[in-house]
Amino acid sequence: MLRSTLRFTGLCAGLLICANAMALSLGDLSQKDATGGLKDALTQGAQIAVKQLGTPGGFSNNPDVKIELPGKLGKVAGKMKAFGMGDQVDQLETSMNQAAEAAVVQAQPILVDAVKNMSVSDAKGILSGGNDSATQYLNKSSREQIRAKFLPIVKQATDKVGLAQKYNAFAGQAATLGVLDAKSANIENYVTEQALDGLFEMIGKQEATIRKNPAAAATSLAKKVFGTL
Image 1 (cartoon, rainbow, N blue to C red):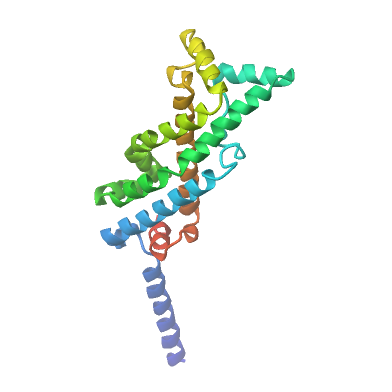
Image 2: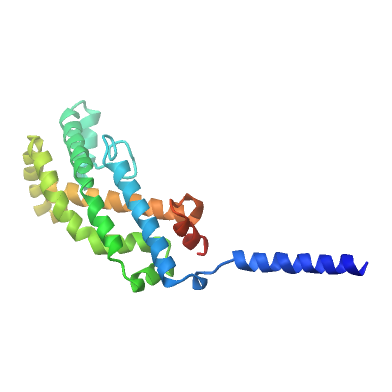
């Protein structure tokens, strides 16, 4: 009887030790592991987002990021379509989304560099921050560089479409009347900002997925880090 009691006590103690060993907290991880796991997850999220958006239909077939005419121009476009005059609107919207799809591929190396250059202090802030803190870090650290890459590609794509000039002329007048903000009055600027917003929205979705389900992370270190959050 005494042996059985001792064996049972030993088994319980062993299970408790195992449970404590498995229940790692973020504080139990080295700074190197915590930063490395975060970098793995961020790189994964950025690559997946770029891959999803940088294909034909990546923007136009995704209602969350599809680029449409802004503000009241969009409302006018809707009425034009209702009266059977939507061909020009469709062509313009198609060209805007195609331009964004062509440009977004250029974002990947910039995003990867931003991840590589992340400091330990940055990593701590992200891991102890909100659910989109990693995405916000990338937005803040790389948006300007990505914008500079996007603009010439978007301009080249929209220049091929004669409607781009018509958009700029029409939107420019609308902006002077307060119907549109200045950024939306130029098609290249508008599409570029919409493409950037779409890119970081998709990165945010990837971050949310990994935070909710650490097993979705691509590396064991990332799984380990996000499993402690």
